[in-house]
Image (cartoon, rainbow, N blue to C red; front, side, top):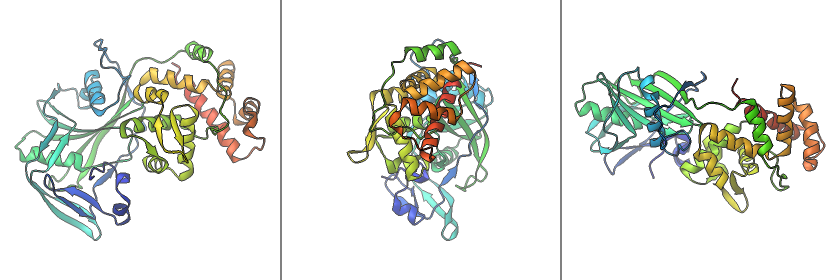
Length: 386
């Protein structure tokens, strides 16, 4: 009831009154106007490609369904070691434990200032710890690509190890996995007694190199896919970022069924945008969702496969689902034949032919649909090895 990993997870009464909650013992909490979350800046540099060696059949990038699997995969691939500077890593003491007592200051918002918090035996949970000859690394891991995180999940373990007598420098690490990309961010606390003294030291993204498709393989994928007729009761997609459709499925797998309000909060969407992406996932057969009947989106079997897989396998499966629909097939065929993706005016002609019930008026809705076709075809072309 008190686990709010991101600011958007806070209940309405907390957000309205600018409140947050901190555990202070194993069963006691402090509620106040505490500034507990830190934003995560967007990492724009392309991910560094790492080769996974060792012939590990039970640990691949095709079934990353938990933080533990993502951490193990990054460790075995050498991603964690590379990010931390190349020293040998020894996995030590993660898990749930009672923290040594400590006291700290936390920034408040109303009034502006600081409040002093004393903890005693508070429970902490650490996703991973790695020790090198020169430092101790503590890790908080998440699936997905959040906009912020709860600093407490790094700060409490950090203070625990200081009070427990660890003499090596402690390096807090925030780790995420989404859509085949591992994002690692190292932080430091400039004042160990101050919760809000967090500062990013460095950040980098990685992906495991398992090879891309060739142009002929993508064309073959289109040839193998059996076309289907678009259902009249499922709106044609107006959601340009197909990766967000994947993230939606990932989050449903991890967190359970999502209402439209949940989708709005997860992506910071407007009401209309949430509709667009729920309908896009429904169009591809990834979710069961009908606002009046089943107000929470649930994964179908294909949706579970997409959410469970990673890398080339996920891309192939998702491309197959897209290519079942005539407008996308014809647009990709044209792009492969002519060397460029048709513009939205040309795609309009394709849509009028393949989806006669879509209407004739060249309005904002029609343009968004044509733009989605173009964006998804560009995504499929991006799967080809340059």
